[in-house]
Image 1 (cartoon, rainbow, N blue to C red):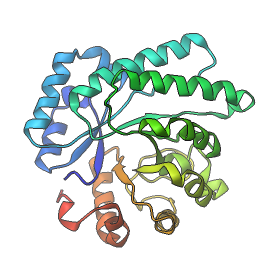
Image 2: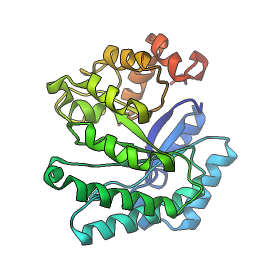
Image 3: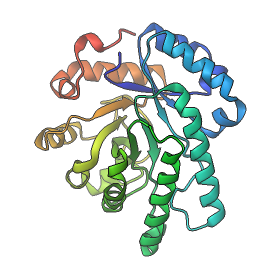
Image 4: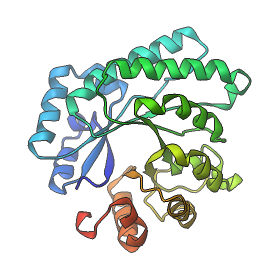
Length: 275
């Protein structure tokens, strides 16, 4: 497929082998979740063999770096050290997969508002150290999670963008964790982050919980999103993030119904798998 990606935790490839067969059979490019368990329970040889299976099938992939329990700008030195070690280790393994791009969590939270400068300097250094582990890394997209205001992320992007670091708008996180459905501030997000916006994570929810529903199954303002992209002449790449096959099917049906939007993102009808 190649023009867009679908999330798939790497640990599923050993726990539930049919997932890899499913992705390869339907020519779906995975955005592989490289979490702590995938790093600690499998050695480099296992990852190399898994990557080789994808490469031999001609399947492009991308890598989502670890994020559970990590805080790239932590003011606690022990947590900061653990975060940096985990991300650097992940970069060494990510390189084996030859990903088209990488994704990470920026993870600014309101707790740090009064100490923003210190958080920012530490986060910048964390990501610089992470990228030093793989100097020839592909683009790194940092996504929003619990941020309710885009400006801290814009400041982070402004410092890191020269290092092939760009912004990933996770529309589901914006609506739920970021209270976007309550604040109705998607235009502000798109306008503020537009200079750095290169990737999207697409899933739906009820505006309260991060449900990872299929597109069109929740309350995400899709007209507003695609209208904003068109207004700013943005054509980011994207990944779907369903948590079950049914939601993937809903998302693919949604794309087919709205090819006028998704053709702007490089999707052609023949790129869509029949599931």
